[in-house]
Image (cartoon, rainbow, N blue to C red; front, side, top):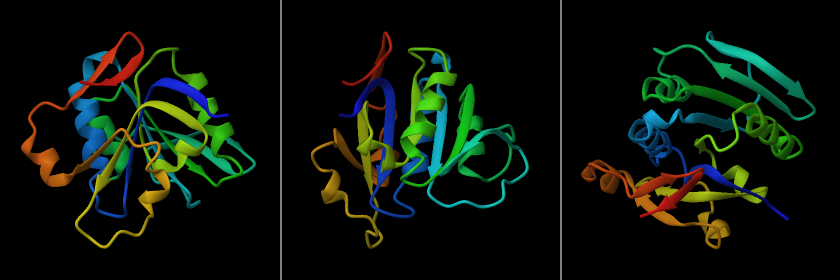
Length: 176
């Protein structure tokens, strides 16, 4: 059974350049006064870039905290958008659930968390799950996620919207 985390907002996409980071940064910026925590997840393990501080490592995962506000990395973009803290999680399927559970335990209970990656949806039920639909040929089968999706969005729709249709009330993400 998936762990229910209503304070988590997950942004996935149908592939590269679908607008995942743009959506995550817009949500963070809109709710920056709520001390949002950002999380970027990657299934690829590689050497950390400057600004990433190792917080924890275990079987199938590494957790870093981003401290570089001005690089072009997605995690830096989240910080620049107003996130109070940003974590970068490298995890394969064997370490994903445990590693994100550790991040959820690091931040104060009820803190709004914005996650860029659809990989968590197998393990956790978020308050909101958005899929960004890109114009490129999809490289991810979003049809596998249909039963979890609360909203589909495109970059064009995101660009035309001044105020996103989400709320963070109490300790829970909601659609307006």
